[in-house]
Length: 218
Image (tube, rainbow, N blue to C red; front, side, top):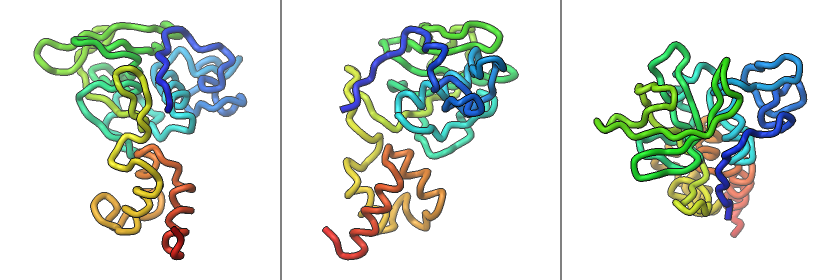
């Protein structure tokens, strides 16, 4: 089980999830502080790093302006219902805004975020719009686009149930790919690998299992 632990405090300044790759870190977003390689304060660098921290591997998220993230489909599922670890996306400003869902209330979500030219880290409440149009960002942005779901599914108590999707284990997803129906119809190359990742599985492990099954293994 992968327990969800909400981030309510700022990451350490030396945490590699928020240090640019050119400075020995893991983050591929724009570096804000040229002295130490930090991608903070910036909403995209923060959200990319937090998603990485949660899933334990390089995320497939966009690295462009926040307003482009929701429509820059990279394999993760989208929707309007909040989920732990999801990226909340807003347009409505020149660059838009993204943040990570840390907890969910009846008419609000709690998010962790960073703001370009502002706070390095914030833990804030986002109220649900009374007109049903999603959530209002802490900065007042009402142009809510939706959620990019984390490939790990956590229940309301934060217990991980594994991959977000219809496959409970590697055997199931490997056999579905071999059948080549549904989402796997004519799905090859990078498209296949990205889709496997979007369901929370390691493509190399899945491919090894496919090879075993195709060779008559059990």
